[in-house]
Amino acid sequence: MSRRKWFHPPVEPVNVVQQIRPRPTTATPFAVVMAGYIVDFHHRNACSRCRPDGSCARLADAGATLRSWRDRRVQRELRARRDRDGR
Image 1 (cartoon, rainbow, N blue to C red):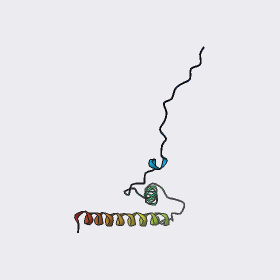
Image 2: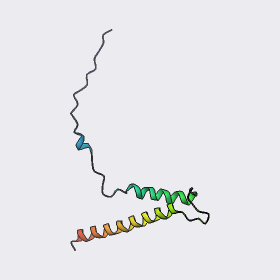
Image 3: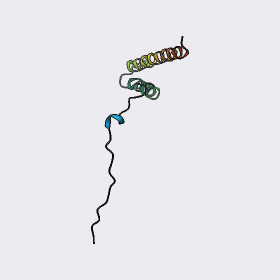
Image 4: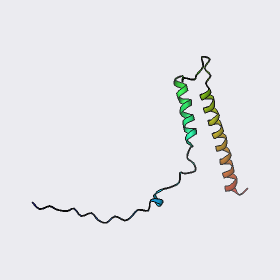
């Protein structure tokens, strides 16, 4: 039996810097995603910090994070619209 060596065509060197792309500006920050998960979780269950009256510090913080993000998103969209229209 003859041993056959497999021929692999030469591979172009890859520039790693070109493969790294910045995250799009429309990406949602991690803290906002987690705040959404916290709100969803509290709709189904109670966490270890939930009080008997139903209030929860984690839920309040998550709600504040989401409200803040939504307000900033609206402001960004209004600024972008003004810039696009040239006002």
